[in-house]
Image 1 (tube, rainbow, N blue to C red):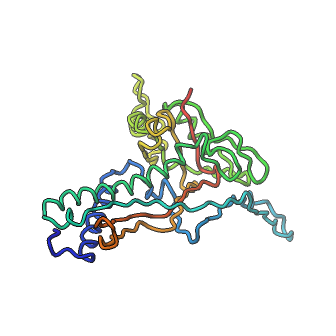
Image 2: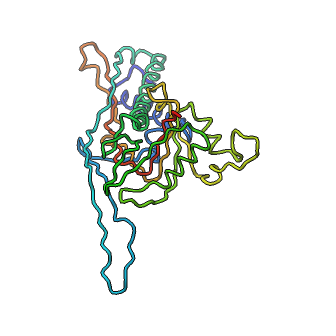
Image 3: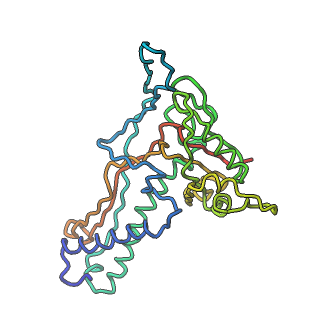
Length: 314
């Protein structure tokens, strides 16, 4: 606890301990299904250097070709394209704390402690809100490197082919089955169908019950025929993630849902991890400590691959 022997060094150590503990608790308390920016299945965690990060789409070499005896080995043609540079953003906040307020007594430190705990949690949810903007904007503001929405029926592959990873159906067993089928048949940039399984179903809070009923029930939900639930039987490894930051309360929608595979390209670009700093009251004209925290990161999706998005409008 703080006392009359408060110094810049021990004051910073005490506040940092409160901040770090609250930040760690806020992540652990979210549960397995609540999505967060630090979830590497949702967002690839990419350390970067410099104030920009360049992404580009990649076209592999296509299917293997048959080779006759004593004939040259068929040569693959791989290439990159649609290069985009993303600027790294800085996020920060400052709390001013009166010298006498911090130094007076133990009771006052309870208020300071609450202030710093809330600050730590705001740092964490700010990153969540920012990163989930990729999914929230999948039908309008989040573009891939080919210049169209992440969820779009107008993607153009590097080999010239077309790709549609946009669905419109509400979240039902039938529409999810349709989405998974489309996901499995989705061609890569070279036209190869890798038949990769979706790993995540991402929904707003409003669809959490439906998501669990569809993916986790033994029998098909919404029927009285005791039919086997095809989705939970065929894809038992499909995990659910939900977030308040894709729903209508955050200018998203309560009907959208998303399928993501293991190799999707939604990236959290981390330039500088969370830092904190206590500035001494002696530098302030009003005798106030300044407690600051911040981090630098950005976000990017470069390709449609291994993603499918439904706006849930039909």
